[in-house]
Amino acid sequence: MIRRSVLALGAVLAIAGLSSCTSVSRADTAAKFGSESLTVTELGALAPGITEGDTLRNAISAWVTLGVLDGDVSGTITPTDLKARLEKAEHALFAPIVASAYAKGLDAPLVCLGAIPLAAGTSVDAVLAERTAGATWAALATRYSTDSTLAGNGGIIPDSSGNDCQDISGINATLLPLLTAAKPTVGTPFNISYNGQDIIFILRPIEEVPATQIIRFAPDASRAAFLAKLANAKSVYVNPRYGRWDLTTGSVVALST
Image 1 (tube, rainbow, N blue to C red):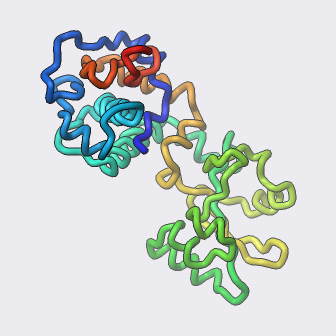
Image 2 (image 1 turned 135 degrees about the vertical axis):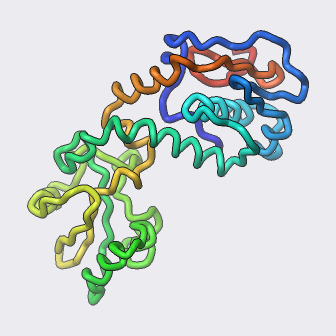
């Protein structure tokens, strides 16, 4: 599914005064952002087999959002490309803003923790050496975790709502003192013996944490940065066949809405 931007764009779009183009669109144009156009054919590639409804509107919303953040929506974009480019653009905008808060590790407002419980006999040093050599945390979790959930989700410890990062109060009360005693730094794996089992933990590097999570470290500053991006935003046009660009939500909605 095509996702919308990590921020609720509506309020900031309205404040920035972004206006919709009112000229009549050619039949083969689904949307326009500045000088760039999304053709009906290209929209079909973003939402294969879909001819109407929210899926199409979300696809157009995501395309426009990419234009706002990245300034470039040229070329043919597949759903996979769009998702990856949105993530990259959002991450590039928000990571510098939250970096100082994120770097506080266990003293940060949230913690993005990963874990790989090892089987008896598995060498901690060998696993750490693979990480140093460039293996991804997800690949190591898949290969070595004795916990099927962690093996399947890339070695990420989520909170009760499924978020990658959680409030420190959500961490197991028995485990937390052990984590604190290890004095971990962000991005450096460390081993703890917990209930007789070696578990390699990591405060995940900010580069490996999705934009949807890192903005939670500084939501107000992230919103302000997005507002600054929108200050010089170009006009948006949506073919009425699909809906209209709504300034209060920062997305494409049905004409009847």
